[in-house]
Image (cartoon, rainbow, N blue to C red; front, side, top):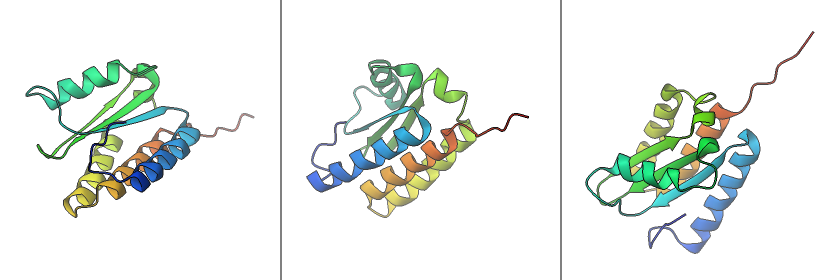
Length: 127
């Protein structure tokens, strides 16, 4: 996670806790990048970062570039089987709402929590 000066040490610790809880809930990995995206295309930069993760198919990357007011979420192939585009869009809207209020940490926490809840495997009963 890269967060520059936008998150305090306490914020980073709180975000790490949120990520750990999310990963335990849905069994996918979450990564957050807060900072400038390289190049003109923030989506391409987020995708490159996602592809560098340890397990891209089982990972979710959230990129926030505050200067450009850009938010990108990249999900791996395994994650996409459990998380729809509509569910990701709901998380984006919730995060954007918090960001517009000036609350970066709350937006990230809310988005990660929503994504993990939607990606959680469904309990099925077998007869």
